[in-house]
Image (cartoon, rainbow, N blue to C red; front, top):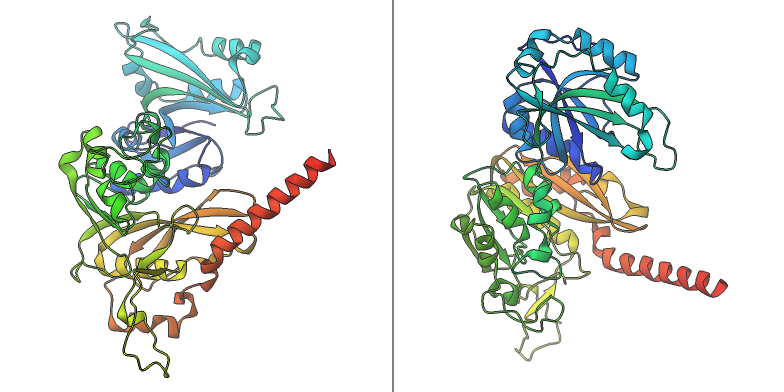
Length: 466
């Protein structure tokens, strides 16, 4: 359990939140890649664990990650760890004294915090006291200051993740120097409940920031959302210094008019719009603009423009999947010689077409290395990896699931542009079936409500049975 590292090589411990577990590893990897740093961990790495040990990084790397992550709670310079108190003590004794010395000076102040995972402090009692006594050999020369210390040290104990089977002794213990906290506070301060302008499908603040991190959004990037809605994703991306813009087919949403989504409010106010949301968080200067546009009929020049495309397409549940009508979509029957034709205002926009158009747009309008991040709704009993849309110019980097119900989920798909489009790419689906749009996505709405009806019917039967 010894940590053999000098000043040039130290080990760090990340304490992660135990929600959105599937999204944590891609987020941390993406944030490290912004600094061109690898994700290097221990041989016993467990992705589901709330504690990760990272190697080969500097303290600046760790601070950079913690300044953006919403999945990470805190980061520490790891001084020692073990499965028992004796192992922890041995590990601490083997940690280089010169690495500890700057933080144990006589004229410094400090305090020691205790964190436990899956067990409350009031239950621990004797075990905690024993662990703290075991640390008495550390040469703390400074003065204890619980309110405003210069240095904070932490003892962390991991009691597993099963709340129904909590062990008497921790599975693992860690001790180290606190470096920084993550950005969990953004989930509260950017909550849609406090947002000036919201809609029925406004994205949760925490997930919005996770999407921005997966997309590796950074200062001075240009980020685009083709299904912008009320601009939740633009708000998150602007928080990291990116210039933001978007389009949506819904005129009322873009212009902030019509019925309100808030309880006890019938109509939207005069200043309820996306620009006002960015103004609320002090990033209005990064607002490029939004406009009414159909995602199936691009209005952009044919060249790379965007550093990232971050979006949440409609699934046909709360928001309809529609596109504008066109003369090209009208098929006249042979016997119709009237010469009259009706062009519908809007037409069905199938999910398979939405995703095919989205990937094709990203291939043409992302810069090389730029990322596309979007949500893919899934009917869980039928899911397989072949359902994820692919494109010859994009490589799939992450595929994370958020469960919505027993039969449905949505997957956060992250793709990176690896080459510029070629004429041959338009026929790629003929040469390789992987690039053929999966038509099963088009029945997601029916499957969603079918599963909901079955669930309600089952609940009703159980209710009458009682």
